[in-house]
Length: 50
Image (tube, rainbow, N blue to C red; front, side, top):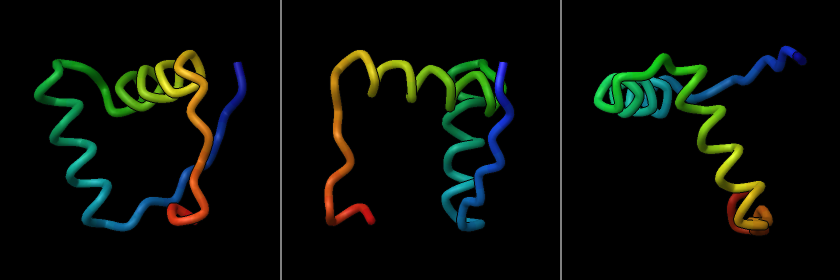
């Protein structure tokens, strides 16, 4: 398993933490599920998101 350091703006961190809690998951587990879904769906980052 690899470790990744991810820097999030404070407001986004709070929103993600709240979403994870609402889903009864840890923040890490919630983020992993989002990355898995994005990879499975073949999502590509957009130039606007950069």
